[in-house]
Length: 462
Ligand SMILES: Nc1ncnc2c1ncn2[C@@H]1O[C@H](COP(=O)(O)OP(=O)(O)OP(=O)(O)O)[C@@H](O)[C@H]1O
Ligand SMILES: [Mg+2]
View: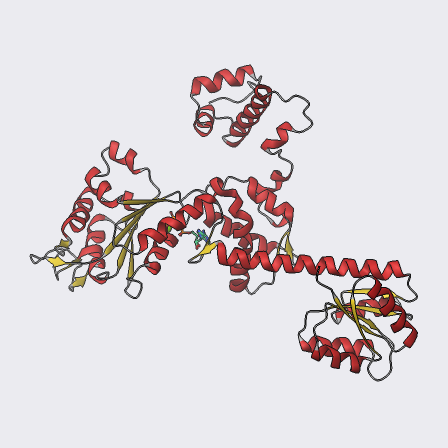
């Protein structure tokens, strides 16, 4: 192991000698100085892991040394020692950046223990920094965070598909980051210098949407007082992102299909054809195959759009991303709100990981903003989270069904797990068995049977 370097600053010759002998015996590399000023000269020339500094000294005392040391911006851990130790001086020294305090006289074990503690803290600090860096390098991708295998897969797909003009269909629940993915694909594509035009297909009624997409001639419809360029034209040589594509009317679907097939269209009220070269990306949170089955979405359009499908996993499918998303959003929100919240307690992370996140990442972002506003101190505590999360502290985890369990029977364990899941589903749906069966992905009769056999049939009903 690498030798740790310590600087001892003390005006007493005996003390310097005693510490040097003791610490060298423990494997430290020791340098010593007789006052703060000399100490500072050492510090300016060399890097020390730890500085042991007396408080009462001639020339420059310990407090003055601490102040000057702060200015150097070095990261050595400073421990102060003093025979005149009162709590006040200790607190004052800590305020000026000292990490710990030992009062003289001390036993060798005392000082060694303090040093070990300081080293442990330093180790943790470095580990933390390293993790944070790895996280930023390895698990972030064009402003997206995700270390889960599912997100890593999404990132890999984005990487592959970005360089081609292939049409991409991005599917996933609301708030999973579909728009962010479209942006990432555009940013990583050779078209990145060209515009990325976004259109929300759910926001406008049919005629307005079509005029928005394809433009119109003057007088094409009531209100079309001037000629207008469509979004497809604006996206020429760039990309166009059709959001909420599942909401488009049949007529608009037909026109989009034509753009995809022959790269041309006619603006509303115009007889001339416009050629366009735009990379098309579309997104939906609907199940398009169900829409096709029910006749609301054209199958041929679906195949044209779905050349490559990026399925964005819901947040509950990748709970392991929550501990990474949390600091990301804390930082983002701190910047926006000018707050200084540093992080969250482990209990908060657990509570967040137990929740099902119907609103996915967007909901998480909002919950973190709520918590930051509510947080009294520097770290978010469970009490700062919205009410929904308060009960999560006591709710047992799936695996807890198995604790203090002598039996290793898989059959018995599965029964208990099944019972817990059914209880949770019933609790969540307010006792609605039809909905609970859906969530549990079992048939309604199967659920009724299980409810009966587990003795769960008290008051809940459809
Ligand atoms: N992996 C991620 N890392 C960091 N931030 C994310 C991630 N995914 C989503 N976000 C953030 O979550 C919010 C919602 O993302 P976005 O708007 O892309 O979702 P969406 O799937 O388009 O939602 P909707 O279906 O409701 O339109 C945004 O603020 C986005 O920046
Ligand atoms: Mg969106």
